[in-house]
Amino acid sequence: MSRYKFRGKATSVERLDELEISHKNGWVYGSLIWNNGSPFIVGDIGDHDEDFIQPEWWMPVIPESVGQYTGLCDKHGTEIFEGDVIQYTLPDEGKTRTLDVKSVNGQYRTDRSTVYAVHRICEIIGNIYENKDLLEA
Image 1 (cartoon, helix red, strand yellow):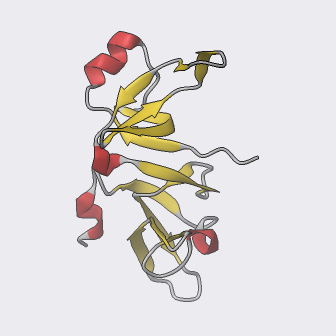
Image 2 (tube, one colour; image 1 turned 180 degrees about the vertical axis):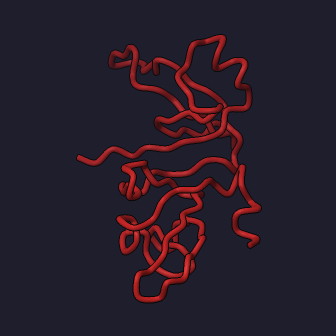
């Protein structure tokens, strides 16, 4: 069974630290739920019975920062998410490409190819939420 994994930038890094929720520069990883149009990343199930479910933690995240894990890793073994900016050089062309990862018709793609086709030669150099300038070049 595959597990869907998401990430998002927390609305408050201070709150993450206060609650001792694991994060990477304010980015949290887990499952995604929406409540009244607001996204939350939630941790594993902490407690449950037939009437309720309680995650170990939950954190509101900035909507435009939410991205789903592609199921692939870059050449360094880092997980690739929607919204990542990847860079690679095709050996036969010698030209370096810098592109963002998006979901198009159920496939994770860049403007040039599927992520599957290049994941073994690419590396993540940032994301479109924090590094928009990487795509301007």
